Amino acid sequence: MLSKGKIEITVINPMKASEEIFLAKVNQNDIVGELGIFDNAPRSASAKATAPTTFLEITTAGHFDLFEKNNKIGMVTLRNQGTILASRLRSTDIELRNSLLWIGRQSGPPEE
Image 1: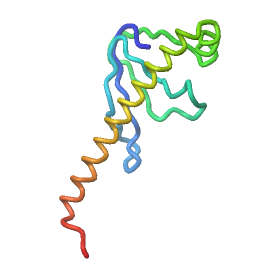
Image 2 (image 1 turned 30 degrees about the vertical axis):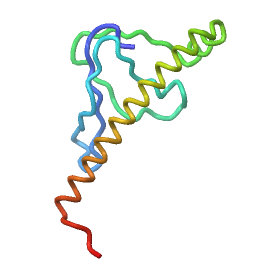
Image 3 (image 1 turned 90 degrees about the horizontal axis):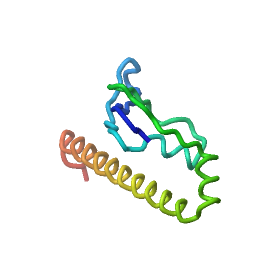
Image 4 (image 1 turned 120 degrees about the vertical axis):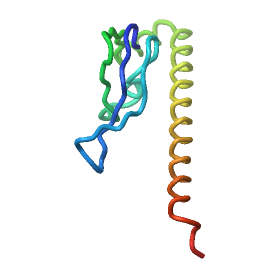
């Protein structure tokens, strides 16, 4: 969780490696890196501080230890993380759909 500051989330443009693509701004009290709780896959993006920043880090082991000690806290935490993940996935779906629609308009109607 970002307890103070601001960060930008970016990815490298696969078509032009010297270029970053901006994905999102993360503000105070937002979470970042939440996918790491559920898998050990490499990070899908990079985070760069744009202001003096302080994080509250909770490791995967720390998460699950807390859940085992207090099931109610674990349930609320997982529900909140699920809500955040669902919201971010819906936003990504909308952006992808809009991009595909824009590309379709550029190339004209499909041939039959």
